[in-house]
Length: 133
Image (cartoon, rainbow, N blue to C red):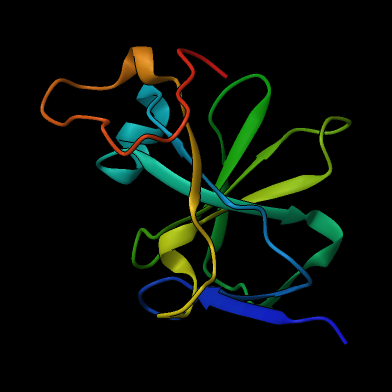
């Protein structure tokens, strides 16, 4: 029997379940993630087929580039998902802060796009860093 992880946005307009394991968290410091989250984005991921939307009336998708789109709640503004446009990767990134907790069993595994990070914070946690993706 697989573990089920649940989560959602602040207002509850978007709720989801993930059947099976989640990828450890990747912290993305790119300018798009910074602008949509207000800081850097900490995201886990799962196969898209394992992600089930339990409530999605307020879920909207924004095509943020020529290769990806972001899912957010149109009522509370919660930033929930990121995925490559088809026919690319078949996984969906999930904002780690939207997981129901407090225990997730996840850890930050790497920082990406650190060349884009702002100067007001330090990355001194000893986790691997990449200038880009």
